[in-house]
Image (cartoon, rainbow, N blue to C red):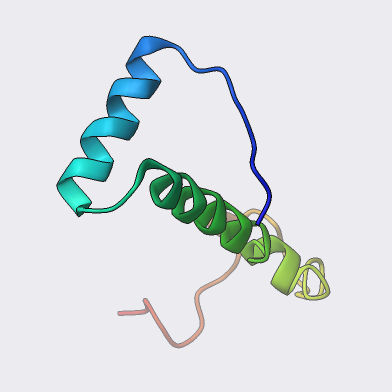
Length: 75
């Protein structure tokens, strides 16, 4: 592992100390876990990215209030 030095304001340092104490681990471990969580989020694709090949594939009026009811919603 490499050593990294960073500058943080007092609020961030206090959060780090409190979090480490609450979890019973080192401040470095808290930082590593937070970074890993962020890296995991970057790997997730948004719903739009997952379904963008389907966008525009449905035919019909874009204004649903103008479509005649057939089947569902009829009395």
